[in-house]
Structures are given as structure tokens and as C-alpha cells.
Length: 206
Image (cartoon, rainbow, N blue to C red; front, top):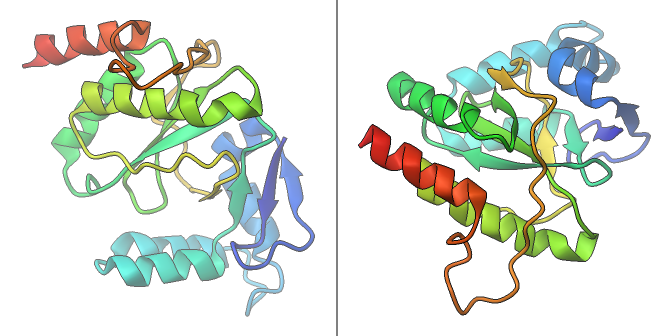
């Protein structure tokens, strides 16, 4: 289950939602957390999301997100995510990135974030102590594959905002990311299946 808080500041009385509800019924979550937020209007948070999508100043977007949007904790699930920013208005690049991510056997979900950028979710398998290295390795692999800047956010309990956008790609049978980095002496992506697929896709699309 995914634990969802009212916002990043108010973590009292969280509510649990399933992975399916998070990705395919976001309006249900937004409606629940719209209660007692300045207005009883059921679509209050949906309107706030529209404001975020239209806002050109990043600092203003971030403040609105922190103040109003429900925040989800994935640390008790088998999922982690990577964020790809600065693609909200580049539709051609966004489609290319979605196509590349969708071709990978490890991709579970590709979704537009609340800011209309991209976020990709992956399953992982291992101990909590392994996670930082698993994330780091996958971060390098995705940077190699996608050729864009990816936010480095390795915290297992990092909160992420609920998006009203349903998945652009969904694969319930995606392969978990299980390889971990044993040391930094050699580039950690060299022996990975994901990296081999990444190189094929990269050179094929060049």
C-alpha cells in the first residue's frame, strides 16, 4: 500500500491507497484530500493542479505543490521512480523518451508528473540497505539511455506528489531491478542488461 499525506507539511492522519488507485484513480485521492482545505469543493485540488501546469515560474509551482498537493510515500512498496524535468513543453522529446522507456522490460509505469514533465516507475528487489546503490546504478543507466538530465533523488522514503494524469505506459509484468553496485572502481552500467538495451536503443535512434 502507498501511504498518502495531506501535503508535505501535514503528515497527520495519512491514508493508504493501493498502487492501482494511485495510478488509475487519482481523482478519488484528490477528492478525499480536498476535504477541509479552504473550501469543500470536491475539485479544489484538481484546480490547483491546473494552476501548477500553467505556472511558468518554478518556485511558484513548487510552493503550490508543497502547500496543497497530497504527497505519497512509496517506501513500503516495491516501486521507485526517476524524475525527468524540463520536457513539459517539448512534445517531440517527451514522446521519444516515453518510447525508449516503454521498450525496457524493467519499466513499470511512465506518467506525466503534476508539472507535465515525466516520471518513470520501476520495481526493485532487495534489502533496504541495498537501495541507494540500486538506485544509483539505475540512475546512471537511465542517463545513458535517455540522454537527458535526471534528478538524483536516492532517498527511499522520498515523497512524491499525486498526479491527475493516468499512465502513458503501464506494464504490470515488468522485471524488477535487482542488480546492485558492489564498488565504484568500474562504470556500474557496463554489465547490466538494461545498459545493453540502452546502448542498442541509443545507437539505433542516433
